[in-house]
Structure formats: structure tokens, C-alpha cells
Image 1 (cartoon, rainbow, N blue to C red):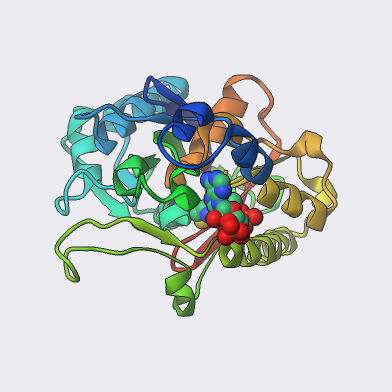
Image 2: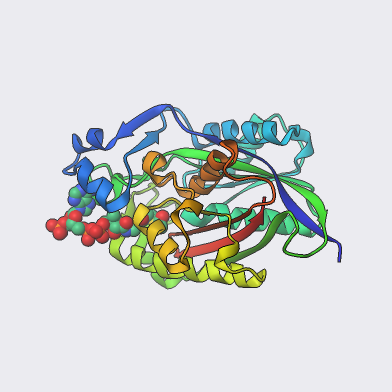
Length: 325
Ligand code: ACO
């Protein structure tokens, strides 16, 4: 049966120039390089400069993804930006990105699912393409998460970084089997009962201030390990795959210990894991497209490979996708 598939035609990442090491953070709060590395695997992160906005990072990543795809901005009819740190309360950061790319046609909007945002955005774009409502889509995860951190809270400020990543999806025909190239399936979940485990203590309608990240780390860790392996198994089963079929696992990069626990639960060897958490830290919605761009650019991920992505974040919201590169 002929179907419309969303094939990953291009990828790009962008990191702000400023590198902040664990040692530098240890001069600001009561922490140490040894504690951060042992508990999280993070060694450094990038932070945006004053005046460097989420949309600026997103435009850089999007331009690179278009270059790799060999496509012009006017071949794109959908721009989705997954972000928790928009430039402004409105309009959507995606419209600033659209303008920054010189586009005047198509639709542009933001998606908010925190660290799971890229998976939610990819699912949305894939459904637009499957339905015939778009032929070319830019799916971007972009964050200046540093702006919502409480720099006096050592339990959270050491975990995050800024950055952006993007993929270009292009409609191509497939035969409807799991050998097709493109996004094979997407699987999304939310459970708002767990709001208080990870949230920002502010917002337009509540306090009128943007607020800071608050997190019950141990509880989030427990939910992450259980839900991520479950949703990965759901995505494998939906396509008739087993874990052994995976070429690359590209998880949301929250914490090395969560990545290792997910590998163990799926009995996957470490060589199949793309991990950037040591040098990017947790860049929220940007972490998966940044990791995809890194591994596709250095030749690890190749055409035809089965790539599984997964993420969980505040909400709680989580999801996974199976992609034939
Ligand atoms: N440096 C030194 N000590 C610290 C730091 C720090 N940066 N942060 C916390 N501590 C202390 C705590 O105060 C506590 O001290 P106490 O025993 O005297 O009270 C001690 O370390 C242990 O604290 P825990 O929070 O229990 O430490 P834990 O081993 O759980 O590690 C961590 C904390 C790394 C946050 C872990 O819980 C975790 O990774 N959770 C997952 C959360 C996550 O990744 N969130 C990202 C957003 S959600 C997502 O993307 C999935």
C-alpha cells in the first residue's frame, strides 16, 4: 500500500559559543565537578550570551538543516519550534524563525512539552505530512533554558544548557512497511497528576513572572526510567521490531544514569547509544535534534539505519518515535 512518509532530509545543530564547566559552577554554588560527573555524567554546557535569544539559536540550526537537505526555505510549508523558553509570551517563536529564514508562506507555531517537546513536534509534523497538509517541514527544538534556572539552586542549575537542533522532513512515498525510510511511528503520553515533580514556579496567568525550574529529582528519575523503556517497547512493537533491530538509540539527554538504565532495560549495548550529555548537558527540547545532528554529521547514523528517539519532561509528558534514516 502506498503511503506518505516523512523522510529526514536534513539536520543541523547550533550551540552558543560560551562553554561553562563544572568547575566554573562550583565557584557559584556549593557543588563540585566530581559530584556532577558522578550523578549526571555532565562535564560542561553552553550558555547563551545576553541578547542571544531562542529564535537566534533556532535560525542557525534550521539554516544548517536546510543546507544539508539541499532545500530552499520556500520548499518548507510548516515550521514547528518546540520550546519552553520562547522569546516572548507571544507571538510564537516559530514565526520569528520563519521570518529569520526569509519565508513568507506556510504555517509556523510553537509546541510546549518541555524536554519531550521535540518528540511531540516531530509527531505533529509527521501527521501534517501524512495527511497531505504539508510537503516540507522544519522541526526545531530550541532553548535558552539558562533563563529559567535558579542559579542559587544547586539541585537544578548544574543540569541544563542552551542550544538548538533541527531536522527537515520531506514527504516521500513509501510502501507502508517497516523497511520504508522516514518516521515509522510516533507515540505520545502525558500524565498531569505529576505536575509538581517538575515545573516552573511562575507564568503569565499565575504570577506574571516567568519563574524558575523546580524539580523533585529522585521522583523524576524513577518515572523517567520506567516510562522511557515502556514507550520504547511500545514503538518497537508497533512496527514489528525487537530491541536488537535498533541501530541507534538517540535519547533525550537528561542524565547519563538515565541513559544507562534505559540501555540496561532494553539489553542494548552501549555502542548503539548516542550520548551528548557530557558536553551539552540537558538542553530540554533541543537535546534530541542536537544529538541526531552530531551523530548524522560524523557518519555514525547512516541512510537506512533504524533510529529510536525518546524523551520525558515536565507534565509529565513523554514519547518515542521509530525513524528509518
Ligand atoms: N552538588 C552537590 N550536592 C548536591 C547537588 C549538587 N549540584 N545537588 C544536590 N546535591 C545534594 C543534595 O542536597 C542532597 O544532599 P543531602 O543528602 O545533604 O540532603 C544530596 O546531594 C542527594 O540529593 P538527591 O537529589 O537525592 O541526589 P540524587 O542522587 O537523586 O541526584 C539528580 C540528583 C542528579 C538531580 C537526580 O535525581 C536526577 O538525575 N534526577 C533526574 C532528573 C533530571 O534529569 N531532570 C532533568 C529534567 S527532566 C528530564 O529531562 C528527564
